[in-house]
Image (tube, rainbow, N blue to C red):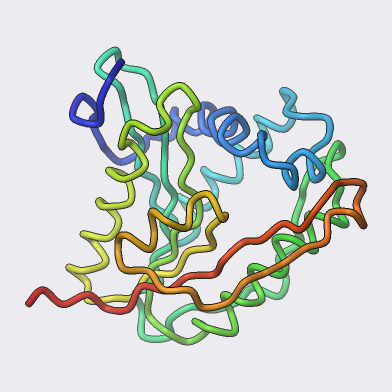
Length: 214
């Protein structure tokens, strides 16, 4: 079993983006809300569409992707960081039209991701910051410190830039972020019973203020 010390981090290459959608799907598909948003799972068209989104954000947007590679050369996780480093800070893009794919529950996707994005804009619009957009680890490597390594790498860069960091965390992921200095900002709750599920999904919007070494 590989430990995080056997993992190498590096900037993702364009050829890596085809791998990321499957890792992301496997990482998040066990959650009930993801099963309700994407009931048909992931097919070839989803992989192609999402890979193109990643590449576009890396090329034309403010995204930087970091991959985690095992000693065997397998990509086992990745992170996407949004860098709002210019003076104008974070800006919203009202003309963006989400494309969730033909197999998705678009209404629930709009509610879930829209609620998180609204909270993000309310808190951070116009502010220079980093946003941890995605942190996804293949199930075979979860619980081995890979996510921590990817998180620490982004936080290191945030600290070098002297910027705060924003993340939207699941209840499962929240303790990790608390450990690294994030504080709860706002909790987004969705009643899954209204969408054919059970219980309440809770995601916590969290903010790590500028970290200064003492």
